[in-house]
Image (tube, rainbow, N blue to C red; front, side, top):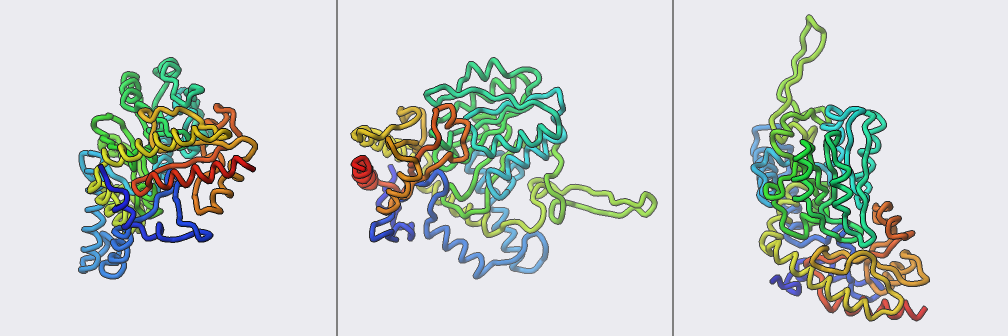
Length: 411
């Protein structure tokens, strides 16, 4: 097991106070805090190695390029991809999904096709497909979610057909924390010759993910949710699929050759090799290096330990919240089927009222739709408050959270 008290020493922000109260950070599903090792790695890059990558033969450029490529390799190993060629660095999960939608979808989807999406998705795995459907004319088919927050697998298996070209589903719901059986979903999808895109924004930071074992075609995740900096994320894709796709953006780095044909009065273009084919322009070199350090940090802890720690905290929090008379937890309470995310409400108060009250005591929680409005509608909710845990959270923070919740109940 990990030692959260020792881990907390690595996070400078946890020493800060709000209104003279120590910070209790329960908004990890939105973004995580950063350890000093990541902060120092970023600082070291800018102080000692800053240069553009793949652009020059001088020492700084060579050093930056080596670090940037090493970051791709580290990310590949973390999810058990077959190599760095299958790892595309993007700004985050949202850009990764858009890349697949436009780079693959624009060239492979027609008016007779269907894209399957679940109703528990983050808006970033709904809106791009809806936008593209207006251009390409295909249908977006939605899989239902049961009242208990779990995916309706029977509905999925009824709706998938030969028309289905890709199935888009979150590995873990960012609203309820429910873990979906994406291995099962991928198996069914492949029986219909459909691809799978898995939103791993809430799974990769919190539990072991092996893309080869899951046999998924695309996986997306964000660095800032797993101790890394903002503005960096990953699109994993099977190499043969990425090879067949057109680039998402054009510019420098993503081309191998551009030559002008005077007779035809046009340029001929040859794409660069993977993964650079999809990384146009000057990349977020420092972000990649920060993500690499975050991955190394998590590997030292062990993802099985991360998962186990969050399960213990979630189970404890659910038990303690049951002591509150006016607090309702939404979705499943069984910690074996969910990650460390708990949506809840307090009778008579809006989620924002609850969040503001907690903030007065230095307790940071999320409120609103969490970019998952369809799932809130299934639960019959206008919004929800949400707590979410990570490696530096401890039971004492939950105890304090419960104390303040009981104060809120007195209002």
